[in-house]
Length: 235
Image (cartoon, rainbow, N blue to C red; front, side):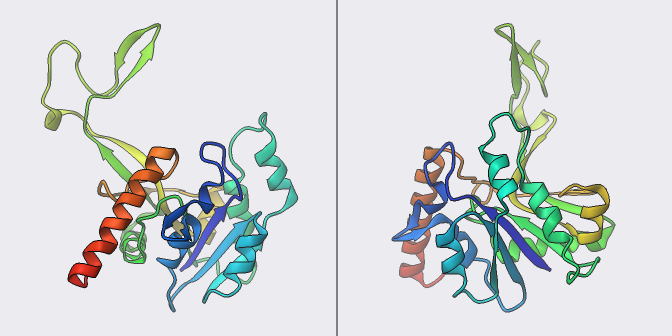
């Protein structure tokens, strides 16, 4: 298995999000990658940041990919539809040195509580008849949308109050990981091709840092984890 991620130097909702500290002086991008470093898997980082490229050159089994100008311009163009993330993934998978049946895990450093054990557990479903695996959060609450200032229920009956345990669950895709093989990703031109297994995450591992409050929450959780480790010697 090869791990692949993309990291931007700057972000729109949190300035320089990936460089915000998550614990002590450790920036978010480094915190998340260090949790996945092992002797078993190579990690590939596509980035437009010279700072990140320099720093990962000293990390074991972590390799930098300088972002192409076309993808940088894509991200800058407000009229461009979608993210260039999949395009970068496809280019990575087109590397002829990678076997067609190689398992590729796309992860995001903005999911700071992803672990290698979690990814490995998710990848086992590729051997159970699934073409890909995505991390998700199960939502079993009253979900609705607004149309003309009116509530339109999505998963409940508005004519009476239901118990939440009786509601039809919905699922939100979480960017902790997307796992498939090179051949299937390129075949379908999707990061989650074919028959998909939805791997449910708990509340902690569903945290994604998109907004300032997410960053504050993650810092609190990390500090609590470290304090617990100092006190009891375990995480």
